Image (cartoon, rainbow, N blue to C red):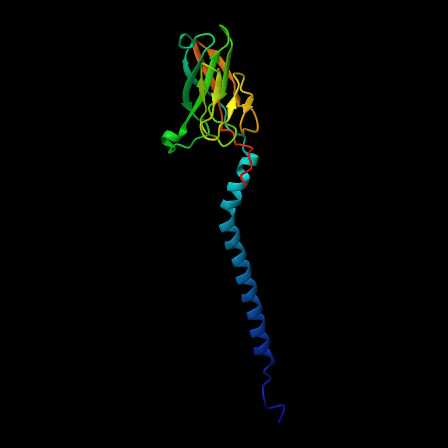
Length: 177
């Protein structure tokens, strides 16, 4: 009687192999989909580490526009902005003509939280309206919460035009608690 009945081991074994294959296939496909979803986020986080910020020389005025000794507020386009940035692509700087051929420029952004500083002639200080940051004429911190001096920018004279080297806006070192 045992010889007349077919054995059921073969279909059961095939079913187990098919189930194992499908399990492994679904795990592999899920892993591929997970990697595809995660890649843009990983690229966004790691891109600043590997990509050097763009530096570009921007014209800010004619040589005659700057008098020796005084600060002038200039506006230029940020080199790291995206095409759709609009008005947010504009940057500002305070430029002082120290002599006929020497210029000193500071970023307009306070190093505390990035608020725009203004130059006040009478006390000869940069003042930040947000949290009372005060900077001396040379950009060093005079009072208030800023952790470091104003960022100094490179300036050059090219064919009678004053140019400033623009780069990304510096981040603050202040820890927000």
